[in-house]
Image 1 (cartoon, rainbow, N blue to C red):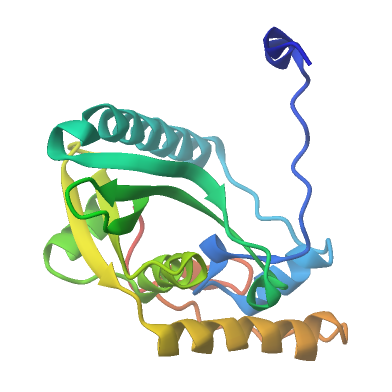
Image 2 (image 1 turned 90 degrees about the vertical axis):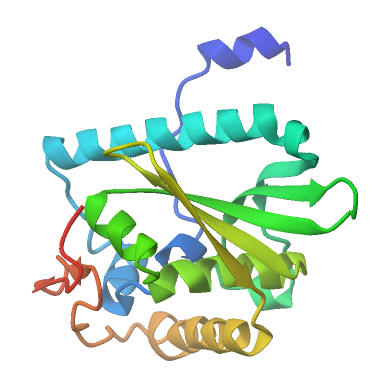
Length: 217
């Protein structure tokens, strides 16, 4: 293929891998089940889609700046947008981490997970409250890539401020989350049994009709 042909290619419609995405950790099991079975698709109004687009733009800008300036702080980009390894533990799981960096003087590696967010979430992070699902997501990446430490990098969509949260690999917690996902497939997906409604958790659940306790961004 000639590389310039990439620009003329048609966009492919997203197709589910049939696996549980790491970005969905901490979400509603019932919603995920219905999505996997093709029985539910979350709908977003135009305002929400614009908010997502703004978040994506912040995300891309932050990554671009980070990549361009990282060497000044003696960090090199090992890889970016990398899929998790295909091993036994990931038989039911898919995911792609934002980037892996290396501290040039020591060779120590870190995973960086960018999170663009609204004022409510950013305020909570500054106060030291980080949603467990964000921690679990990064911890899974650390587990699968066998890296000891990583950073959640929160970017405020309102003011452009940035906060970082250091996360250390917790093997016990990672295996607990993996087991929850495997149990979900074994007890619900493969048996075609719909999970019960959730209770909304932190961010609410439109599928089950619950509002969240963290407000909305």
